[in-house]
Length: 310
Image: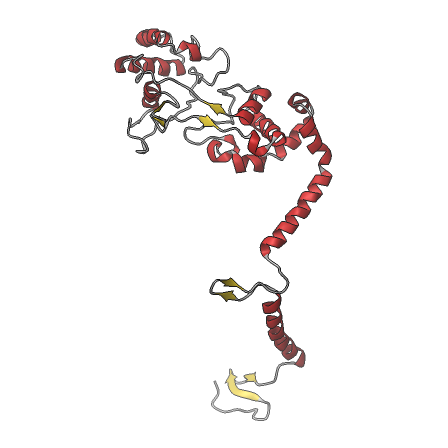
């Protein structure tokens, strides 16, 4: 900064750099000052008109009665009205047509799938995972393995009415000893690998028939008809190993451990009104009372398409 001011009458502040760059002291334009003062007026206006000032137990509401939630609700209702008008024919068809007809109408089926994604996310994804990919100890819906059947009407029945899994506790009921359970578990693991006829698991195979396992799982480990029992001939397991300390019955490290646990303690087995094993709970609630007929149809079609329904 120069030590002297070569332009004393220019109206600069006396701050000069590089010999001729200086800071002027001119007043701002009138339009700028008016806008500046108008800003203060608008602050007062906004403080009166909109919710603004925090108080000890709330805030000033503003004379307009505006809130962000109210504006959102108005916009949402406007969108709903637009959708209702635009897709009224499809919504009516979903409500009135049976599932068999809807499945034959490709355009209506695609509409049902497209409008079910958020519905599935809000109500089903917590257990079955995003896109039906499953969560620990909940069925995967994105494959073609069905406990209660993959026909559209069977899927609808599962969602509408709910399902309750059932497997007796073979160990606690005295049907099988611990040694027999171990042998059956070896046989079940062999079934999943296509080695059910291996001589090394012959003892387990015999116990499998003796222990009434065939009544639900079929003579070959594959249920003859959908009845909620797992297909034991694939590698899709209803219950994965649990080793997080959530229950104290067993500490499972492998899938075989999980099979042993399921055989011994069963599924949904209660004693004195309480589950014997908290990890072997298999209950699907009934969604029809909550969602209604039309949305259950919509979800059934969505799930059918997710898993390559039958």
